[in-house]
Length: 136
Image 1 (cartoon, helix red, strand yellow):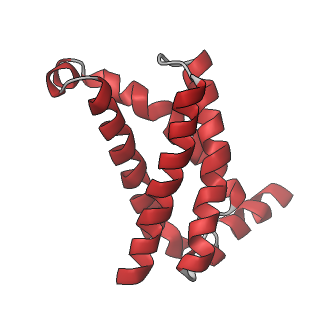
Image 2 (cartoon, one colour):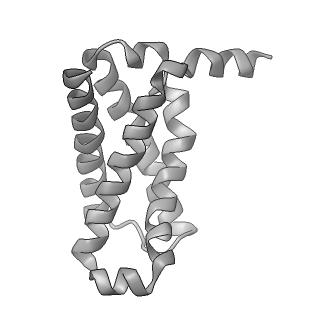
């Protein structure tokens, strides 16, 4: 019962737009990254390739973000609360994604790639959420 009440404090229905936007921001980031290392023709000919690019980081995000509170009631109040929650969620989520990429999925987790993912993922999620609260 303690687990369900813990998650109940971490998940708020009003955060659904944030969750959708976060997923879009991460998919856009990962797609742009894939396009920087391959061609549209390659991606079109290998449709499962992008799924393998997305999977480790989306799994990491799905596991970590609710636990940290990226979708809690506090996350939907203001950008001042939401952006830091997204970034605090992304750092460990990216580490999980990098570990999955190194040991389960194709791609590896070189230090330079890890730094790029930590920085650009933080910018993508934080930037998207800042824009969301400006136009909301």
